[in-house]
Length: 340
Image 1 (cartoon, rainbow, N blue to C red):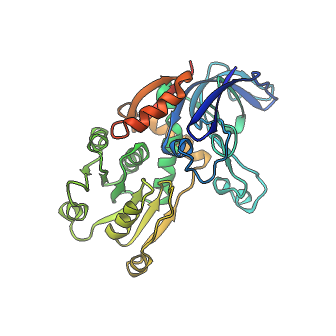
Image 2: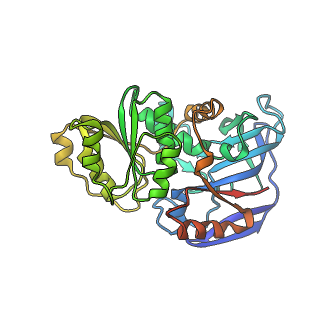
Image 3: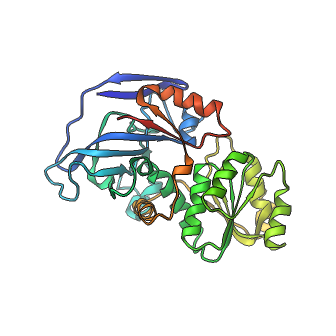
């Protein structure tokens, strides 16, 4: 079978390897779709701080079960599935406390260990989630980023009735806004410097859009919410400016959730954090129940994914997908690799 490998930043090759065998507690999945996200792009540019090369990518996936181990009764051949791409030790203090998503020895498929950009993959049954036939194979590949959004909203606490500012209208920002609305948020304002992305955010039902290069974000917040501002800020970019905005525009005594991946370490205005009694919460990953929640939201049609899907590329054109993202960064949201 064919497997993708990034041998060094910006250089993708394919290798022929044997189709893997399964043990009693594993499933063999024929991969169908692989999503490319911002973290993958960091790897492509050699800017991901926790990835070494060579590495096979692929952590946002959907596929069809081809075979199951003899101890498995919860899955069957032909099932549509996705995979939770975490490898954890199970023995550190975090795993023992149920916080395996911040495992001391955490490895994420596609970054610190082999990802799923292959024609077939073998996965332990505990990481596999079955998806309803009513959910498309494309949408199934977005369960992982929706799980990120579910984790981000959960990190913020009860969002019912709250007014929320999301910084960044990339796929994670737009999905986070939709999850917040699905969980009862009163309204969501989202900001970005790309009008196309803001248009997609509006299309999927987010309430207010602001381009801070055209309209002053602070004035827009006051115009909509008054001088009290918003109850919650979720940062989904990972840049200095959006960290500044989060601290500047968060209501006193409120919460800021950091979701964006930072390629460069930001400076933080702790004087304002202290003076306004802000709570900053970092978000690394998700847990299994966030995947279950993401699937439920899709099944109940509370999340729109189709407007986020920008383009498909065949498996052999993996590098072309990255080039498209780089050259069309203002209009490319979610790119999918089609394996079959």
